[in-house]
Length: 179
Image 1 (cartoon, rainbow, N blue to C red):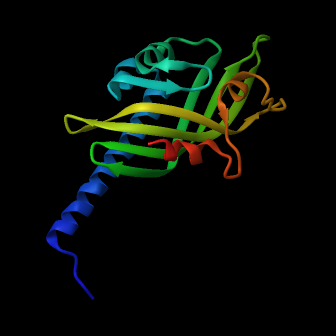
Image 2: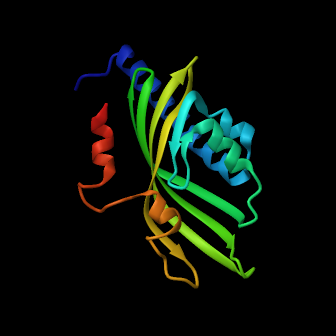
């Protein structure tokens, strides 16, 4: 059995550290969105960063401004990122992470609705001055549940966002091949 060389071990350790930093970037994003923390969110993006969230598509800086605004229709939000997979090539990386987002929404009649959305983020990252940042982020919605209602994929975020598919026709297969 061949023992790994010191160089191999150091390269593997560097990759693990990069992946940990990318994981923490995803966690900070969830925190920033949930807490409407514009400063935190803005710090996570490259200068030319962009996001396609379905309901918003454009500059990450503008997204950070908008997401931090008070929204009386949403009382609270929680996002949970998991099942992360990162591919690193030097100072560029791609990644996919699963996300479950929960919100408590205020309906027009004042009643509350619990909404649970599940999907994935397809990301491109860039390392800038030793720090990983989002370069682009695409939200893919895979499922949506709203208590006391039937989920409607023809309106709202489900209609605006890219819908996931449980086949090789899913956008993730094209996403990784475009580099």
